[in-house]
Length: 425
Image: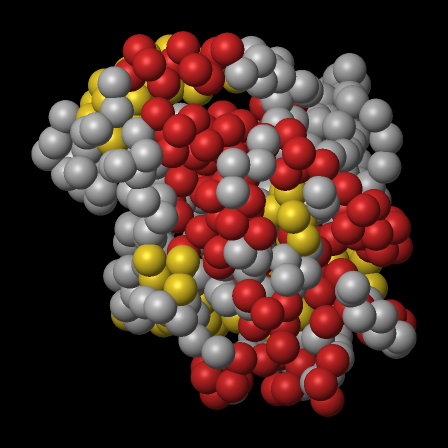
């Protein structure tokens, strides 16, 4: 159950009107409005709202405008006094691989300190925020519970509340759209940095919406404080819109998230990290290529295509990862090909892949241990999926088992949704 917390008066959702519509040359031509404006672009139309404030910017390479200017440069050019820059997992520049701890350093271009937040708890962040007046968060999420940027945001919100600093989220699209929610809701007994709060595996919310939910449901629990939160909303985004429909450029949110298609499969094939299968790291198609040296690709392909999974087909594939699992080895497996994003169910697909590999290769398949526990349990938010797969429960029966908790989550989620509407034409 999600914990209700009163006091949502601290949350302010901001929108601004566009100023002017003429062309830069003074002609009568009206400038064509972009399809979707991010929170960053809306802020840059009104930079005066940060006048006189020393700004701490939490960002990475995705914090950019549609004309490929990084938000840090654009904010400095607009006269916003950014004095500190903070990075999540993979760093401000996005260079580190998963799980590596980025360093802190002085940026040679701007002369500003780039400070690592990854791996730090809220109490460790508080002194890092001493020199700023306000925190601004601008990072592209991918719509999956176990992607860590949303928890850097949550921890930074908690630290900002303790330090009495306002926290502004510059909203960006959920690349999976904001309509569907899928997967199990995290069991609080399995809290970790890949699952901090009881939300579904595919949550269907933007970072701004998540921030309001975190603030309203979780941050004030156990004697904590809500953040002085402001969300600068996007303009033009509809809940049904996939990323390709926004008109925004795609920038890798992390080294193994090269395309919107990667994000689309990630809620399901990200679970492969919890097994001894390669999830395709070290290839050009991470999370779309799945395999292991013990797999005969044609066998797995035939089994998965016979499973009749909606919106996806599989081809036999072979690859040789340049790093991560099975580095330098020839790996057999499959590649996912999404044919209908509306019907595609990433979590049903991910569970089915694991089940079929375990059925075909019972002596070779194994769950990946994480100390004394299983990594899959952290990713899925409980031991439920692992134990049900081990018991041979069919994938569709497994997914049916969390529909009640999804219904409860949707009911709570409605309070925090900032965008409505059907697919843009």
